[in-house]
Length: 356
Image (cartoon, rainbow, N blue to C red; front, side, top):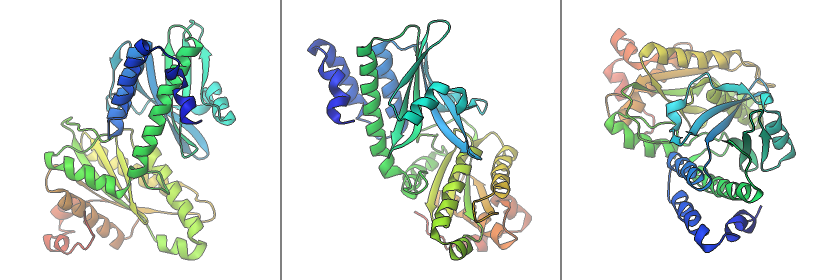
């Protein structure tokens, strides 16, 4: 779809009606992070179209089964930030949305369904690089006119295009995870106030402890040497998918390059954080990687409440180094290693990883 088609419903409007639309488009394209971008889109749809309910659906794939995770963005004129409704119970099978499945298979840009109570549900898939990464679900009491749907679609197209520009600079090309540059910029900015970034980079101060983990694929060089870089890349992509499905919706995942990943987790206490990392480790161990077979990961993690960004990342990396030196395929906690004598200050001082 070209730009003329995207803006056609706006061009057809009278100048009086067009002014509010242009004001919202200026607002949408004036942001530099995803959370503000999404909130400005929701605000535009609410004010221009009187929409009752908006959800964002994200897609997760596990064992060749695709799931959708829904985030409520707007309901009855109340706007929600994504981390406010990030329950782990909101995951459903994609197959439960047959109209959306058909829309994706036919590569159409929208589909809708009339519910038994007469309300209208409209789905608009969001594609980045010809891959569907999410979907905007809009529910209203009655069906919209063709012109109204065209206007909604035009706003979503602007959102899609601008989101792709943000993603291009923030994400790793192979896995689609956030890249090292994004981590450096965001963590160095937020860790100074002991507030780790939320799921889309926004400032968040919930009072919960934040946890940072460094993840490394064990013996990854042997995978490349034995099976070749094509299978090595496939392992990286599958590990990235397992990272997405293993961690919660308000956690942040980054690829640092090579076989190393970093995860920022919000958790109420240490044991919950440990169980989250352990669950991911087990998911990797139990997964059957095509051709390669069994793959394991080592994880080192630490709290983020004290220290500069360089120190925090260095502590997690040192815990990872300990895990790899003591058998691999395990999760190690930096503060626990220090208190038990497994690590010493001198060991940390010789950490040779390049930070920031």
